[in-house]
Image (cartoon, rainbow, N blue to C red; front, side, top):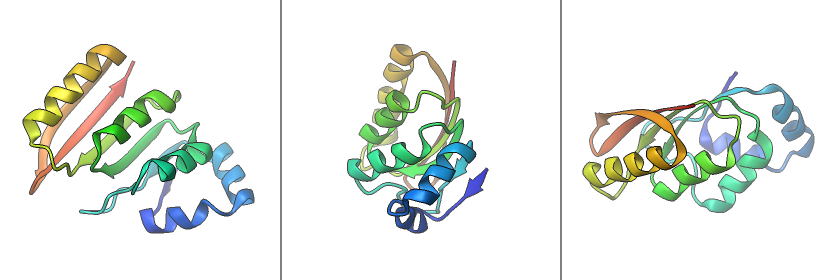
Length: 126
């Protein structure tokens, strides 16, 4: 298991040897930082996937609903995801989006307000 600041995580993307070790060793990852998005864009998510494709649990902050889709579709080993969503969308839209996705991908979820305009989303993948 590992907890790392999202800024520090980005620095790891360029250390191939360390990335290979993380790929084998890390199964639980916490990259959540209060009021700070864990991923800036899809390119970062692709790099993140190459390193941590085998993780089982993830805690992060996301502000783009497409990034949630990326996690759910690409990370085949993930069983638990805790996401803090600071989206520009209102909470009703986010919940509707997640509910539709849960029917399609067969996962359970719990959503509750966390702080300000942020929703805490826990996902359990079957």
